[in-house]
Image (cartoon, rainbow, N blue to C red; front, side, top):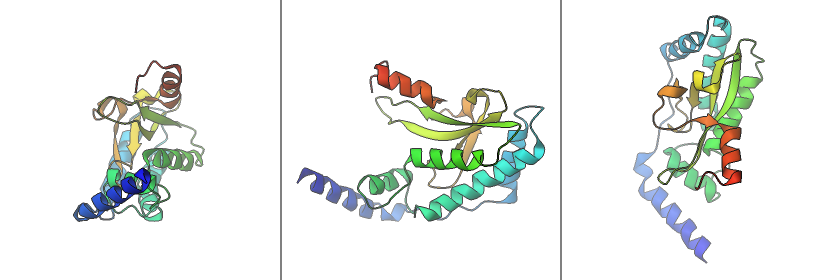
Length: 184
């Protein structure tokens, strides 16, 4: 009974916020080139062709996933739809897994892919995303690739400059959650 009531409240909230629906993100060649340049700038050994390919895939795959997962709302509303069974995928971990997996298919020789996690806090739930760095560098030296927060419109920034989240390697956060050193 309580679950049905909560599901109904979620549906009503989603309908009430329908005016906040998102449109399909648009991407320009300048957007892709800016990301490619930032990826290439991660290190002198980064292959410009790999940087361009990674940037193109990051943008195009974000858009493809938004279409495939029927993401038409702000991320938090879409999350409610997934949690209540109205959509199959689209939680941040779905985006992180899909983006990391897709980029790894390229077998980059000068780039590394990482799964970044921002641990939960009293005011924010856990968040996952993909990151890309120069081969051998840590994820902290890389760029976050986060299509979740803007409902399929790729957000990217150097990991250390993304002040909205406190990114850490996924396995580190997982270990802290399992051993209880993260209280949330």
